Image (cartoon, rainbow, N blue to C red; front, side):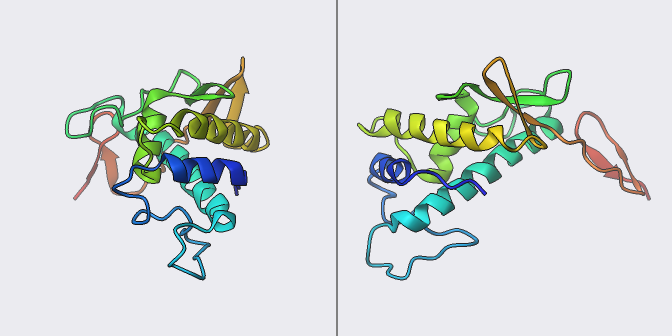
Length: 174
């Protein structure tokens, strides 16, 4: 699992919106829980928790890209990824330091970061570098092509009794 640098976790904490800092904890995940909830953040645990959130978010983007086919009605503006390319891959980063716009939108939601924060640009650059470096080793799910980071969008499983009802939609056959 991705573990971001302590410097990255600290910058993300400082880039959090004042309204959520201390409420949306960066050090709690399925694997981590801080021993002292009176401390605003445990950076050693936040390194793991942030990594888990970012990897889960990337996988949800891939799943959404397959299921939604770029449709945006009923969703927050900017949150929906584009359709995968002809090879079934979704672009997450244009280079080792920059996420795609829809990824940044989702990161802001799951981490509580505020693009107006003085620490925001450095936080997102650090996070991008950490994620890119980690993803280089995850060849089953991720691919780097011309410095761009792509995630492989896996086809949805076919279940007996379900049929296609249009792009990305399934209905129950009774």
